[in-house]
Length: 279
Image 1 (cartoon, rainbow, N blue to C red):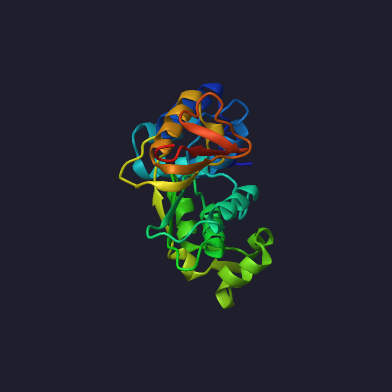
Image 2 (cartoon, rainbow, N blue to C red):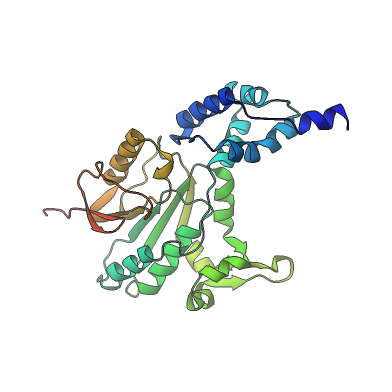
């Protein structure tokens, strides 16, 4: 075995290096790396060390500390990408249907924010649900944001492995999805009618910049489990300030707003509502 290959297989993340990365990621994203995540970190960052031919994580972290913008974005992308799929936690979409199938048509569009949209499955699931249940002619808009530029490229492309179809109801597949052909064999694409309703932007939930407007519903699912308590309070306060009166904040069933919900009231498990104007 050569010296080079020996070095390449002996990159181990030390306790001090993990502590440095924990502070770095918390400062950049608000995410708290918990003890036990060391194998995940090594699995995701090892390719970057190999790319730069660096023998230790300390050497790699020096690139991040020196402020290399491209490498910093790549590291954040690798460490913050989480699993997602169509119609995840389906009761939330049943709730949307219940609310909006009974809504009379109104002049302003229904606006919904997928605040940690990842590769876009959540936003397009919402789009399918609204397209199916809103009154005829009712406009709607969706905003999807994520800190990872890499996953947003997938979201904007709106093309997914054909296995993703397993989670999509058959009638929605027929109405809103297209099967790839030729070079796109093995993929499905979201219909243009829905893609045109969704805008994806890169955004850090702990440092929101720009005016995104207000929303009828905000999906903030499967992200707060990575934050500390104060970061959660700050994020919920920001999200609440972007809700329209009577609007809903939807979190994952694995999360809770106990002690931090402020003016929101629980109306369903993991669904919170802001009081309507005058109510």
